Length: 459
Picture 1 (tube, one colour):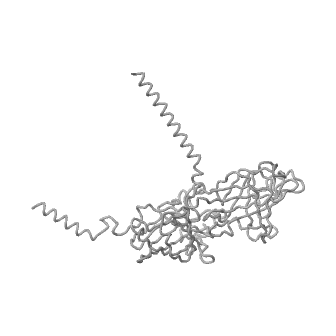
Picture 2 (cartoon, helix red, strand yellow; picture 1 turned 90 degrees about the vertical axis):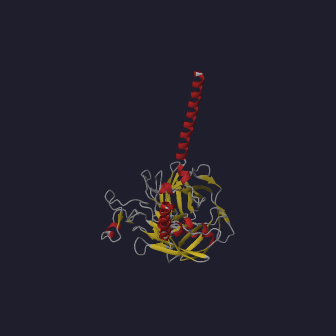
Picture 3 (cartoon, helix red, strand yellow; picture 1 turned 180 degrees about the vertical axis):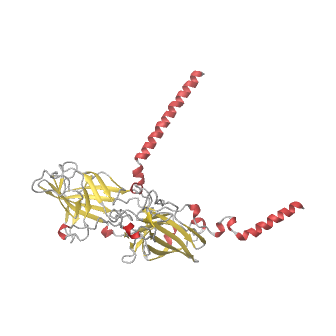
């Protein structure tokens, strides 16, 4: 009997050990794959930035290539101060010259006596040139200060290109080595780039469409975005209100940070502060570090959704986007909102609109952005730092209700980053959905039955 017990206990111990090993393996697997999981965006599952490297001609010691970045993200763009592209050379390549871009550092080129290369670093970092660059230094899709617009909002400006002349490299398809360790900052972290994959040479069609040429060699690199990697804290929040309830549900407290001028002086500034101008122009201006107005949520951006009116067959919503950042004008901003009634959106005022259908048959996601030269620029914090619009929805009687917060959005994104919503139990409720303590008209009835019960107990 004792032997059987010992055998069973040892078997159980081995089983427990195996389960423990499996659990540890699962934890490490999740940690290792955390970045790839977070990089997936359910509202834009195929969104990415694709870098295409096309060798156009051979030179005595290398080649000339055109590098193009295509932003295939529907609503996420790269804003000021722009992108920075980096990689590591596979051999001892140098950059002789560039058109439409430049490296941030030249590196050690001391071994070259006469013709000095543009860059000799093993891991160069490339940035776009600014608007107004002389024409002889430009190439198509260059010189926009690193700004790349989103694919849906402005497809004509959703790409960036530059030309690079590479030396000390191979001069045939078999001797050229593909660069590795590609990085993309836009302008900070957030993008993760895969390995470069050699593919079919890119084909180019002439303007008249009568001739097609192709690159000598091409490879592609795909970069995906993760808000988890890009930001330590959220950058926007959502507040809610309605015509049927006086409650205004503010953004959750400390959504993007907390006011703490004792341990973090200068973390925010009051709108009426006499030192506002000096704070804006102080340290951090050149790096575009946010300087936000002191609020309970401390977010640079707040999106307010107000259920405004109710008609027989329609209902109306007002959206207000407020900028609390004193150091940022948001150009080409956009908003993505998910709500089941977007399949019956009748009219929208003063915003552009496009339906996004990440789930094909389900039309519940909308992309909104400003009208050019009217409200496409969201000014810095202050009296003009807001943009507003109203949406008119047609009711679907089988699904429409104001009950249980149905009229409020499910998700809100600003410039591609997910905004923090208030907790569902804080949403404005219909008056007949509130607890009895909130319904004074019922108090006389309750009091009557309570007194009557007491009287009957004495009879």
